Image (cartoon, rainbow, N blue to C red; front, side):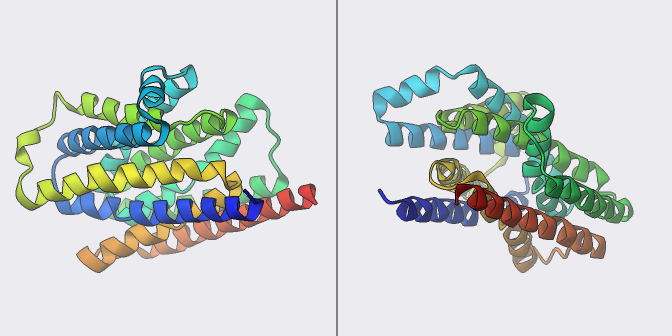
Length: 292
């Protein structure tokens, strides 16, 4: 298959995945349950959906083997994403959606820093400069939350971003191994962690229908597409497309619920997103220059 066709397939997978994933925050707000009940239903349903996706993609027997024989790296990814799932829901409930998504968008930068400290991968001057600019933007976002009491939610988003970064590093180091089974396990672990504290029967009617859509369709389909995209598209280009979520998710919440980000979030988030986009474009240009 030509390289251009591979890249187009990667772009379409990533773009469709992130557009489908973007209403996640809105659906969690509309469902309106407590943290543990949301984590139980969201984790359990998406675990089933992702497991089905693995079986459909890989075939019944190979799929079962992948699900039941996780590598050590897969176990770490599963645990990291399980923590990220819980922290994400907590963040959505305790700060503005825009804050959560802007802070979560830092995961590629954290991944670069983790790769430097643990694998001694070199970091370009551009990345260090981006880190400084992003720190300034992040400070402004946190400053804005001081007035609204959303700092705890912002910190939870930071935990989410770091956990996702750990998973990104492992996925990149072992890109020949599908991590979709690990994502299925991560959802299952989040469900099990929430089980002792959840009130599953409290969801009914419209809330239950929205949760079924989220857990069985939105999350499995979007995460599978995003997980497959790096097979066809370089990581910096995937990272660039993923930045769309930080714009789309707050947009849906604003259109449906009327939640407007604070001025500090708009300015700080603008600095962060602009810096990340410039960094992704710079990385893409450098890679193409080396390949030429």
